[in-house]
Image (tube, rainbow, N blue to C red; front, top):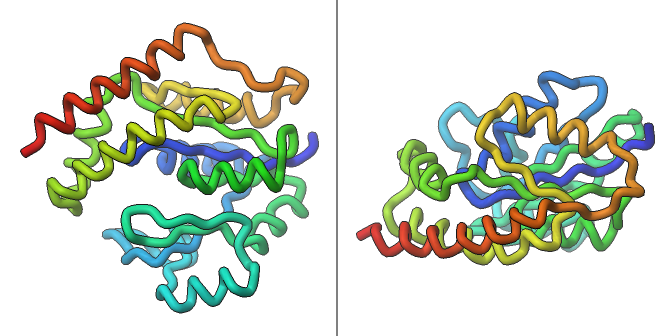
Length: 216
């Protein structure tokens, strides 16, 4: 098995972080996680060096200037990035690198590691309302922030067509199994998506706009 970079992207509330954590817990010998860097503050139960490398903005920008990032982007007013040294460490150990990043970062990874060296997976629950409920359950964001994330999700859906695979995240065990299978599959298949999912993605955007309008 040739190790590759496996990118998981999703709108906020899509479940990519939960899936990434479950994949590495169930398959520690096959997957390594690249701990991202961010300028945002830790949430409850998050730990520096485990969930993220929490950096000050000046620290982050210094690392950008030193070309230490494979990818980085600004999201919700905060900077996020993948450190090259984290990726190299996992690949050199013969394991897939699992990246939990947003769509702009995914684009940068594809440019530097074109398939089959990387595989990008876009993740969504089947129902848009699930995204809203997960954001509300965090209890760490204002209505304005939730509205911004739903608005951003429409843009992210437009980028979904650039990803190699789509996963409906309705059952964690199933989603984890799909990620593992995709990471290990024959790269000759290329980009594959179910045709009916294109209609699903289109309708998803309309439903997100309805949810956005319902928030006051």
